[in-house]
Image (cartoon, rainbow, N blue to C red; front, side, top):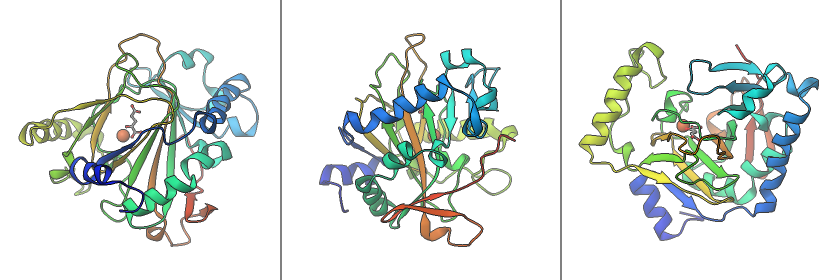
Length: 272
Ligand SMILES: O=C(O)CCC(=O)C(=O)O
Ligand SMILES: [Fe+2]
């Protein structure tokens, strides 16, 4: 596969994720860290009113608000700034960078279309899950996620946990017959995930990274965020989910071109 060496290709086929160490230079990512700092500094204006933010993640206080309405102390706990790619070239330039777009074209067998981005300053501490719970692609198995380290991920700051080979099991279908999560049925989902791990003898991997490392996972890879062992320590990262442009050609989907073979879905941001 183009852009992947033998070891990386093997990793993709066997584990359903692939790692590219040192993929981005530190200076390529600094504009993103600066952007987040600047957004927190001045939370006014039209842009701030359209940025969808999830605060106090994985706690009873979890809430979705426009960034302009977020209380200042929310920055001291895990939160997500969603879809900054819609407003900022700093994000698009990285998540649709030429080499990354080419890799995703090879992995998906089609040119990428960004369908969302998530900027996190801390580990998410998210329960294990497959991303098809939240954004199934129109064509099965034709979605991937990229994860870019904006600073090191260590055992102390709540690194990602990956469950290699979890795609070997059939996906869990909810009562709708689809993979989309249904809140009331999540107990069944977690039971499915646990038995999948036991049946396939999967050993979880704690994913450590340096700034600039790139991880790409397949839509069916089971993963989650581990607990933040060192209270208050940050783990800045950028997660992007990509569909294939060719699966979304109907004019209902507003698609913009960022560069050669690199597209994004220009959706309307909404809190509700
Ligand atoms: O960064 C994390 O801890 C998890 C993010 C994640 O699972 C996702 O965005 O799909
Ligand atoms: Fe995920």
